[in-house]
Image 1 (cartoon, rainbow, N blue to C red):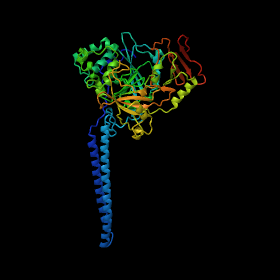
Image 2 (tube, rainbow, N blue to C red; image 1 turned 60 degrees about the vertical axis):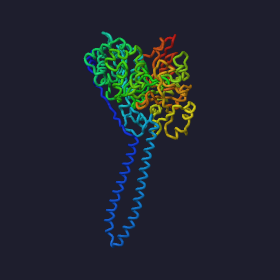
Image 3 (cartoon, helix red, strand yellow; image 1 turned 90 degrees about the horizontal axis):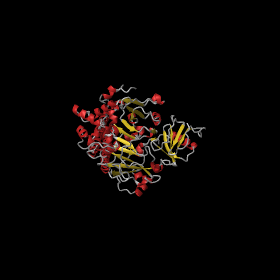
Image 4 (tube, one colour; image 1 turned 60 degrees about the horizontal axis):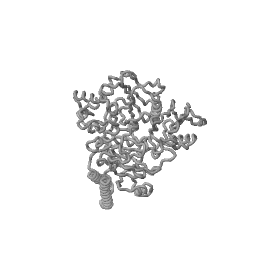
Length: 609
């Protein structure tokens, strides 16, 4: 690839996006259900009348075959008596069924009023982004376009650190679920694109990686074209576009702002599968885990989803991995509700202040997760799920000398385990993980039981002891009402985060999620029709094996003030195991030679391999 090979394409407006709209059905639930019952009753009466008419026509023809008026009169009389009794019985049953169905519909309507923050089993045709459905679909029920995500990353110039090898390798191992689009942005004159042949890294065998080398001029034009577009942006005139371009070239935006929430729309025409609506950003200094475990079913029903390294209680765009669903057309223009981005004049003349000179995640997170009317989140729905990449309840012990925890990488398996495991036990553990059928994660339990019910149980004042009792009980109120295995609460998103004050929105952690080990795991969801800044928290009993934990991705430790840390210069295939923590890095091959080190690195010691 040559820096200028795609310049003409880069400067053209990114008009390759296709928009997918989902129709929403709006109706009065009570009147609709009673009308349905009325129609059923009328249709049953019509059927009964036709049945009666058909019977009498055929019976009259049939009786003419009998000789004698007396015989025919007696036969008519007997059959009419029996038929009249049957008719009255059928009519009574019809009325009973209709009344029962009407009552059922009224009860359902009352249930909806009491569970307005929850889900509606009747609205199968409603927009998924409003939360009006009986349950989240299981992953196995999703269409193919909702089981595949495009990861869009940006890489400057041609630097090729060792961790990129492992990022590209584990990304290709996930080819059935992930596409990777790398925007290789060139900076100053004379810089070059990534040279994979020189680095000895093959990115073609998985068939899911595309690298697009782009000049800085092309980068700027694509972004300004989007910001000034008629469909998505400010509909700039030529003068406004020139002013927007001048402001966009400010050093601040080159340093802090990559405009990540709209990156999918800007580069969608470069996707390997542009018709797929799911996309996300991801750090590139990671080992990519097994994305067969990703909650695609939740992302298919909300505007955006992000994870947390521990139990989620801060509503924040995780830089490690955040995903969006472009089926929700509100995402295309939501960014314009940010105070500094309401119009071209707001952006260039700072009518409501300039974008802050700080990490962009903080600015975008405040706008996208809060549902105030003047912020993007007013039009969006979202989910936060636990255990994406971090150390969970081990968090306080990880990344220290003499840690009792270590990360295991083998193929695309990313596990956090105890340092007490022998290499044979590690091998057995990894084989167990691979042989166990992929769990239909169900959005961390949001699909509920066999009937898929996941109605909201509004118990905001539930004490932790009562919550624990309900969660542990197998025959309590939750089980009897077939809600689901877990507890659901309606919470208010706070802007006074006591635990991590630098974040702008959070909910107080549930005490049962902070025990060691935790009794519950939580996930947070916000739907568009909820009250302003309200979220639904689902608490599910934590039944994971405590010998290890699976992760979606994991960072290396080169950036953690460990200058001695080194990654192997070869791929970690499925027959190899990379084990590392703050004390050492090692690689061994599973099998009879497992005790031999293929690679070893430790502070103060010479490396092997």
